[in-house]
Structure formats: structure tokens, C-alpha cells
Length: 209
Image (tube, rainbow, N blue to C red):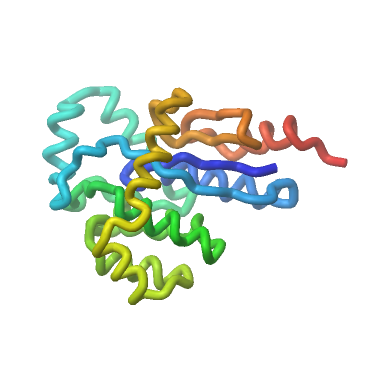
């Protein structure tokens, strides 16, 4: 089977969902022919300079008990998935268009998952700014892309319209939140499901011989 994973790299649940999928693939990877990471932007109007994360969260969530519960849950769950969330570290939320371009280009080396993981780790654990082209080039080089070529591509608009088109398509088919898993182009699973749930879907769609 094939799996399309729709994510935004500044979404903490996407980091959790990606790591849950990693765990599921360790159990059922022999049934999966390809995994593709697809772009989504929760805040496509974010300026190139980004926005302060603490200010943004304060404006969006305030002192909401639901937000505090969600944050506590992520911080508790993270270590079991190898994630050390650091929401208190100063950070800026980037416009993720360029980060999605890098993930798209990493398809050429078969390492989209590594690129997505590296970007989310840099942001959620280290507080790095995902709009920094030096960071994006470093991640690209780390997954086997030519650093000089990627730097030149980032300086222009290469594949920007393709990314926007994919995001528009995701919204057209009804995706309003991420992560969102699409199995064989026909079975959608929303949210950061745990590995057992993803394994159950894989078993249902591709039973063992």
C-alpha cells in the first residue's frame, strides 16, 4: 500500500503523528510500498519574518484549560516517541512554505521522512526558525541534496505554486486539520493516532498473506 501524510512542520501533533507512523512502520513496513509527505499550512499568511511563538499562543489560546491539557499531554507523551518538546524556549513560528519545498525536494533522494523529522526536531526541540535558509539548506544537505542547488532554489520561487496547489487540493477534499493520513488514496485517518491504530488500518487494508 501507499501512504500520504499531510503535515505542517510547525504543528506539534504532526511531529507526534510522524513518530507514531514510524513505530507502525517498524511493525508493518513490509506492507507499505511508499510513504509521501504532503504539505499543509495552518497559517499561510504568516510573514516571512515569522511571529513570536509565545505571543501567538497567548493570543490564540490565552489561559484556556484545554490548551494547557493538550500541552501537558504532548510533553508527557513526547519522551516515549523520542521527542523532547520545549514549548518554553523562545522561538518564532515561520511561514512553512520554504520548509515544505525542501521536504518535496527530498523525495528525489527517498528521504522525505528524514527531512520532515529534522525540521520538526529543529523547531520543537531546539527552537530553530524554520524560515532560516541556512537551516533549510543544512537539512537538505543532510538528506542527500546538493546544498548549493537548494540554496539557489530557495532564493527563487521554484515549486512554490506546486506546494500551494497541493495545499488547496487538501482543503478541497475536506482536510481541515493535520496530521492526516491517506492510505492508498482512499482511506483517510485524521489526527495524531497512536501506532496501534495505524497498524490496525494497515491490517484491514492489506491483510497478511
